[in-house]
Structures are given as C-alpha cells and as structure tokens.
Image (cartoon, rainbow, N blue to C red; front, side, top):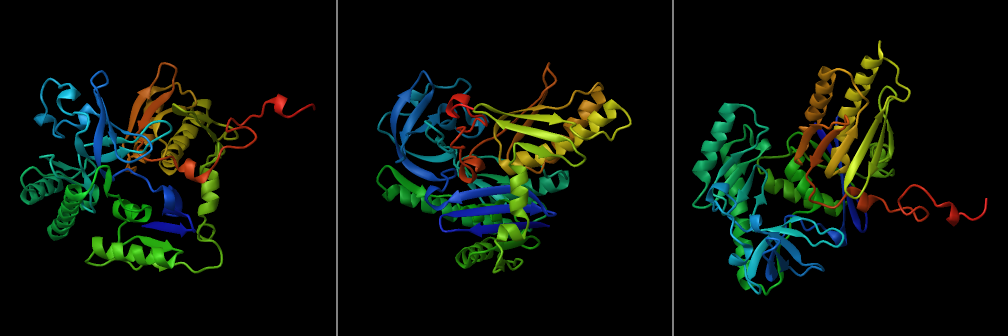
Length: 416
C-alpha cells in the first residue's frame, strides 16, 4: 500500500509518495510554471536545418522548439524508409504543424517536440497513428501478455496504436475499453481545437501534478490519498471518479494543526534524501554531487566495520548503498549520466551482486533507467531518462555566498 501526501500552498503544490512509510517520490509544481511535457501545440516551422536534420518550431514560448527528423518520420519503425530522408523534404518554413512536447525547455534550449503523439490513460497509452500494439515489459506472465495483446488488437481502429501499461495486468476488459473511449474523445477535442486555432496555440495541456501521480502510480482501491487543501481535494475526487468509476478508497482532507509534511515525516525524509552526504543503515555513507553533465555518487564504508573480512565489509556496504541509490535516484528525479564509485571489490561475483541489487531497486521506477556496467576504472555507469525540470530547481536555490559550489573564495571573505 502506498500513501500519497499532497501539500498545497498559495503558489505551489508539493507531492510526496511513500511506500511502507519510506519516501520514494517527490515532486513540486508552481502554479505559474506548470510543466510543458505532454502538452500539444499548433506551431509554425521557422527554420529547417538539413545539416542538423532538425527544424525549429514556433509554439508561442520564449524559445523555439526543437524537432528532430526521427520525430517527424512514422512512429512505427517498420513503416519508416530504409534510408532516412533529409528533413527539408519533410518540412518547409512557414508550414503549420501539430507537435507534442517531450522534453522541457532548459537553460538556453527550447522544448524538444515530436509528431509521435501519445495520450497516457489509466490502463494504456493511446497513439493515434502508431499502428502497433505493445505490452509493458513489467508484465511477466506470458498468458496475461497474450490476453492484453488480443484485447488491444480487438479494440484498436485503423492507424491507432496502443501500449498496455503495467497496471492493466488482470484488469477487466470493460475498464480498458472505457479508458480507450476517454482517450479517443480527448484526441478528437485536440483535433477540433487545431482546426479552429490560430498559430501558435496551445491545444491541450497535460494533467496537473496531483492528477498525473494518481493516474500513473496510484491504486484508487488500495492506496491512501491525503490532501490539505479543500479545493485540491475536490478536484482529486472528481478525477478519481472519472478514472475509477467502479469505486475508489475515499481520500482524506487533512485538517491538523501541524503542517501535513511534518505530520507524516516527509520533511525529515526530504532533508535527509536531498543532502550531499547521506548516512546509510549500518554506518556507510554516500557523497552525492550533481554537475552540469552528470551526477557522481561516492560510496564510503565510513563507520561500518561489520564484516568478518574486508571483502565482506565492502560488499555489504555496497549492497546497502546500491539499494539506497536506486531509491534516491527516483526520489531526486536524477536524470542523464550517473556514475557511481562503489568501494573496490576483489570478486566478480560480488560486483554482479551489487548490480543485481541496483537493478532490482530501479525496476519499480517508472522512468527508463539503463545500467551500462563497470568501466575500466571500476566505476558503475548508468543513465536515466530526463524529461521534466529537476525537483531541486523548485525546492532549493543556489547559496548566495558560494554560488552553488559549496566553497567560498578567500578573497571574498576579507582578511582573517
């Protein structure tokens, strides 16, 4: 059973997801800075650059959006030409086009957009022109995978594509069919707006942070939802009744005098989880440093001396670290390249155990994560897809003294 704790202030909504009392996901969203990922725009092609195989599209944001040639070709790989065409044969300056945002704008870069349209629902992801059926790899039973494939093939029409999500496992066909009807209606509304709207125009915005988490991670019949805002509670309840018409566990409106995050121990776990130095169970430590291009995590035995030998001590520390790193990557929503400096182990068997522990932990992460293996220097490399703004951007700000480096130049401190 999971607990979803939502704190609403005047300008920000903060959401915490707990599993067995442990904080596993955290997200924040400012009212005036709701994310763009998943949103649809009617845009106009501004530049087509054959040398980059990309185009820039005006969608009404500060920076033009970036559209790569692979996001213009047919979404089904088997339908794509064997030789990739030049993008200037596909798009022309001034051309109006419907695009969906797949990556948030960041720094001096505009949003990354695509014409591979997707609409996620409770049980499936709807793709109006993909022409294929997919089933989540996390559904292990072959009989259930085959059932869902047959069901999806029966339900889809013409060029439609469907991906059955993990939560659709063992779900009634009536519920899946109802989800598809809602998604088809949503797509039709987007198309109607596109025909009437002047370019550039927002056609559809993705759900709010609370609604996204209810849709993607929440079991309405089993999990607990607690919100400290009457308005947000009403909106959440309306959304629950829409996606779970067969019934759901009543949500709780929190009215305590203590702040909701403090009452459920979220603040304390956030402070620990977002620290640079994290103490592990048993006494080991993690040092967590995030740079522009990658995240580096250093594992130390510190005060842990519990093994019968040095190799056993090191391996135990690394196993505990691997499990905690998997949880914290998800909690911090760390993306891009991640390099982990585990303590050196002599036996290949122990290195495999550490990788297996990390793979097991990240398997519950909804964001795509790839563990690439050990480098020649004994570092473990992995990557994690990044689509939204860092949680840290909403929750912290650089230190005014050190500018985020963690060190203050002595010439700024005057004479000592």
